[in-house]
Image (tube, one colour):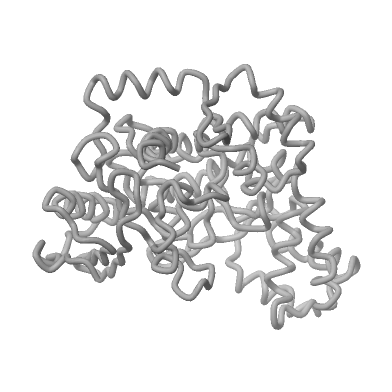
Length: 388
């Protein structure tokens, strides 16, 4: 793929994913737009939402959990995601049965059978009835006290099963400074769940994924959702009136209808300004690990040079580091360290940074500090941010 084509795809994706947008929106607006946001790293997931709501704070995001607007569960790929509470039910109806079938051998190896799952469901329903909430450890204690062992990986798989069968989900934030997320009964916690039949679900899922992640390929969607090829094609056909596509290197990339015109208009008007400054695709962003901009596609070559993959997933262990993105490309990683008095942001660039990018990193670090509700500690001097 030519550099110009990568640049175009990256620029449009930044806008589609709300990263480069300056429009005001709430936390649930972000998650509803994104459809589902990978969230096994909860602190990172909170920042992933906030960076898409200009001026957003951690407290604003966690309030959406406390009100049941946003929940965390395993709707896609057997992986934790943030989703709108109203949509979790139909998403699980679409994906859960196949996911559970795929885990059957693992469950047998853990000694988890139908009787054990039924016992755990009964215990969870009794412990959480009346809109009560319990942390994972508290619910594990209730299981263990009634003879359902959570030793080894059994506890995690019990939660995973109960979430896939629409018994529980992660809801409100609890604990010191709201750093933990409690489990609740799904039917009690979600006030107005949406009901869609299977074809409606497929059409909506394709439309929303492509709208929020486009330009994206059918192969990207298949990896992201893990629906069957025939189901993806049904969804694409139903969603097609709301979509448009472009061809790059013989591959068809889908996006929401009107996206190309909007991109042309934005470029003619000087582009949108991101939190890092610099305007349009040249803006600088500090993304969390597992952000949808990186993880939302099976082909990650648009934002990421092949030689840098090892730098953001050290040792290939599946743990994605937070990334610095400039001009739509990953140019480094970053880390943060907070105390009760301040938060420090430390960049780890993979390339020599221009003065403009250095200034962009600092400005975006200030945005992160505002989100955290803490002053920003002094960062390294620009001259120290050299290629490693």
